[in-house]
Length: 376
Ligand SMILES: [Zn+2]
Image (cartoon, rainbow, N blue to C red):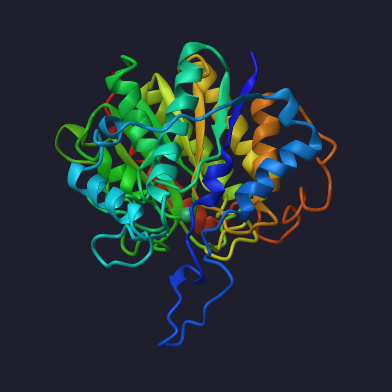
């Protein structure tokens, strides 16, 4: 059975305006407006385009996303928040962060795009559940893993992965879902969505104390009925393929084996890449490919191969497409001629790509938490 892929041109039309890197431009202060905000469409579009020019896209099952319904979105978000986003979007847009009013700029019509991003993730999960595809990648935008129930955060409006997990539980009859987040930033919104919920295991690997600040600590393990179902691996800056692959071998895969999910969602950010401006990690396209291999093997052994990826961050518009290509090659089992090209191999020979002792110490500490994960 083939691998699925999903993209919609409207994802690129979500307008984050002229930022100053990841911040709002401020002509009255010192934040000189750049031509674009850090979270723009380029890396995603080029990811899709690289699949096109390598010919891989022709060998995938291309799915068409549907918008999520308000009812589906409100399984996670508060109706008041959703209404406020809809109202702002219908006017001129604004900022979806209801707490600090900074960090989630959006333009007119982004409400509908955000519904299409949440719905696209649902579409991919449904296609896997229905057996239309074996596994697949929803290249959605805006991203979702920082969004909170009552506020946007960190470029994210609606929690795409969290909403899809709720859909699998509420509409598809599943009782256990796992979300693995390899974005370089902590998946705080996804974690918060299920912090006291025993049905969803959230695992986030991220750069220690990057964003949000003081979030994603080893001590955040869930509460109440959800005790043990949140797991964090806050890796030191400079972690490369060796650290990430070891963290998957020693933490992620054993945690999944213990929890026994019926479906695995990957919150896929490529901002742990060696070239990313918003992260300080060194994962390469080949590294992402090998992490994908580990997840495919785990999903095959645990949940019949049910594995959906939904796109999160990734701000190197040049390297994101190659990280994405490596993931898609692994998912589909199809190698393209781009394999072995210069950008595909970028970062592979950098020093300190191998596991370092201070990185292993964090992985040890996270591995010690696996016994606290509830079993079925
Ligand atoms: Zn990120």
